[in-house]
Length: 396
View 1 (cartoon, helix red, strand yellow):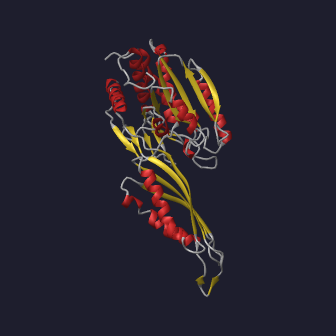
View 2 (cartoon, helix red, strand yellow):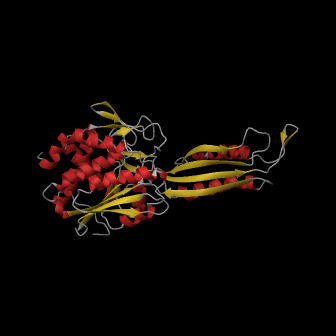
View 3 (cartoon, rainbow, N blue to C red):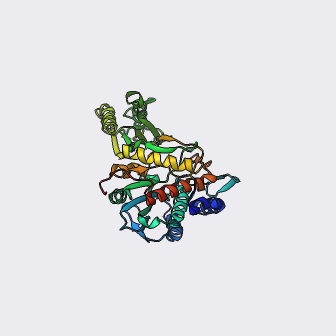
């Protein structure tokens, strides 16, 4: 079929996109490296600021880092949201700091797939779309946040507010290693379990008071059985702290728990079960188990509206001659969970192909940078021309 030349011609930009990605990933922007985040957001503004809209930094709660927002044609009847995060899981002291080109088709580096590669795809797609004839009929907002890897605590309210003024959201987290889009995701919660014992010496080879480390060990053994009670629940514990090598009863120990759920109602069930497991320990004299935290992201579920948009997205991929891809579920959450919970239908996993997220082997398939940008640009072009229509939405 005939493609707009602005989209067909994107194939020649593969090398440029790879170099842009390398420059962004070589700049450390770990979630707690605030100086690095400031430099990174300036780099992003230099690129995204060339779009025909207004760019501004937005202060957030909790974190000193800022979000970047670009609004283009906010008066247009169709409004779209492009969401991504520019923080990574690699702190300033992490040894994994630089990109390496394994070959012409693969690059390894910190954040290449989570999710600076997705930001490259987003930027390339919007630049190409802006050169097409009907781009002026679509308005959109780009929102890039600095705290997804630490739970989006600072940006959650901004994301929810922003979701209310758009018809459809696009989230550029990574595609699956086989190219599939992520259509649904687990909901996630984060908890800290703190155990307290009673100060006392070790007498006659025996501990004479409740030991916080022993209590935590017993508690975790029961928590790890939660997936047997609730098959959709996953629990991951760590790191664990507490105790010492000196004689005496350990009076403090704690652990972090990441809990994933597939149904919204499981959040209350799991919370109630955790408190029920803690109750017998709290009934013991001198022993205390405290739970803090909660569920931050509800599950991302598919809807009839998303199914229709997903079908149109697949057609764009096929018309571009890309290898077939399908849908997938991820146990990781994303900001699509928050946007969807605020009422915005979202497509997720629109970034490039890659794998080994949060590891020193994180890699991206370089040709997929252009390929996934072309799918996005073609979808936008067809929205603008009316070849694709969105399902009814409260904003319509």
